[in-house]
Length: 455
Image (cartoon, rainbow, N blue to C red; front, side, top):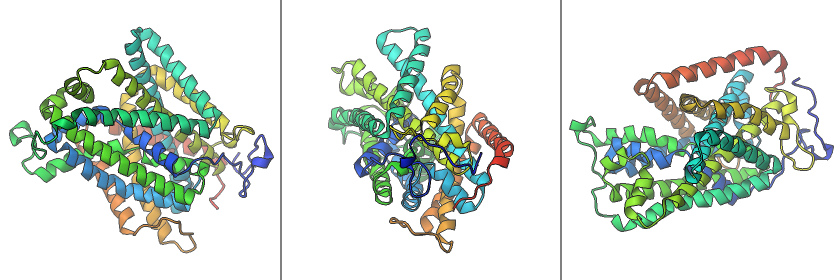
């Protein structure tokens, strides 16, 4: 029950707060690669084609506008991470800022839902790609997905240091795949008008800036992933410095890569062909580097998918660990392994939840719905920083930002939610609403056990 001392196998691992400590091994460079790996796996491999269909050759400009929108919230996360560097940071900060366990519970589980559906989706994508490369049957893909999840669970149980080094390896390969696109296509640069947009007759607006803003709504989602950095803050060395440096560096590197890839893609292929291609970057590679065996880019995709799943698995388990110490989830989820210093029971609990999700094969709309939940979380987190900055007695972090930035960030995220609900299909908002209703119901059932206040 909440309020009961959390038992850990190894009392000497208890920190000054009386909670079992996780292993602090992450530095700024690893944190930057951790955030970069999460962002690069957020869909740019397929998203760039959809964006080109909306914006034409100006897709690179849409990425820049999306970067500005995403940076507003990223600065908020960097500032909050420097103030409150702890696992399950989003749930802790939301509860502290709004003085409401309900909001902390909703924020924490919304992020956890996003992470778990991402892990489940990526396990299926990994299995399908591996089956395609090896010529295996669809029935075999089910076992490949399960084997992938078991391997992932073993790695996360092993320790944060090992998980981070695998993340570094995957991120380098993942980024290398995108840089390879640029390298083979850079000779095409300058061959097209980079401001060409779809003509009004094809359903596009005749106001270029409005068109770019519409494209930015889509490309904004390629920057999702930066929020994962907050949940490993308790495993950072000097987190007040490491979190802001790593997060902002990751955003900067992702932006450079995205813009370079976008310019290359529309230079190599006409934007109409790019929009119609089932695998846009694969189509670019086939034209710019026909000598490269398809299996090479297929293997790179496996690393990108695995990296996204790894980052989200770590995020979900650390959220469960952190929320257990707030009294928002059962206390046994907060236990830490004496030797490995990982939240082993939280990790195993995530495996139990994510395995059936990965096997049912019908979570595409669920994954889309969790994007809406994440945007709601971002709006709340921006609002949380506004409240905390104006509250007497709150400690300041080493990375403080002007009040106008979180205010703008909250406005942008709320606007993106409205755009998605109004212009998209109804199923994703309906599922998001059902998920929120489920979270509220779970809170109502568990609330008698959640009486501990945030210190």
